[in-house]
Length: 317
Image 1 (spheres, one colour):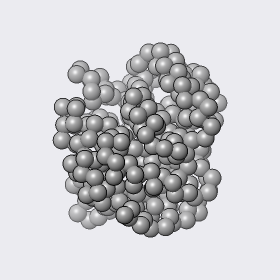
Image 2: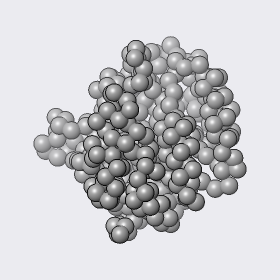
Image 3: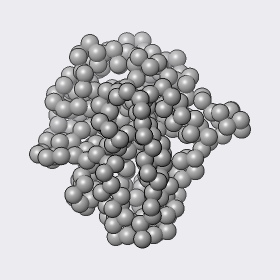
Image 4: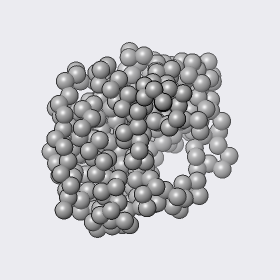
């Protein structure tokens, strides 16, 4: 039987850019076109609105955005909205990844690429969420706080100069274990990377392991977002280290129940993006397991039932 989740807690802060009306949580998935397609086809009537995608300022912007527009338009009349992860560093799947370059962005060396990015966003002719330099505190990125903040502000100022009023700037954090303040339970190291309320539309957090749902820094981050009046997007999420969806009911109770409980009991959560991937096929993530929800009928049935709750906002024709 499907677990009974707590009722959503009301959210009282004013709406931010692209924040849904009422007590709704936008449904998203990814994280590549094929994975999204399989998810979209298996999920039933409650289709995801957010389409996860990634790029870097050093990519060929016209090519990237032309391809992205084709991918999004292929789902018409369903209206998809891109959730773009904008790297300031190389991709984990690249055998020779680009070193982090947030200082170059801050210094204006990539202003032409930023203009190309803005022109591409306009080409899409739809809203977009951009997680600028996502997982800013992750050691795998290596971002320096001062340069990161300056780079962020430079990108957001470009959004404004191009009048991209339907593009939300999403500030994305990863709750690392064992930071210097962790023992006191008041881990707010993320604020060193914060560009300021005037330059941010959404806060965001990436969640993979079950312990991250209740980690001190996770809860501190969520509390700060609520107090400042920002909606929170779960920018990336997947059941890591629980044996994959093959575990069926056990995996559902071990990971999905606390995951959806987190969404329902954290009043600032206004969007979630689920990564429906077989992580085990990639050497860098070989011990994460298979997160494709259609692989196990028990998981898929429970998942569909959860998404039928009126809390969730799905795409429309």
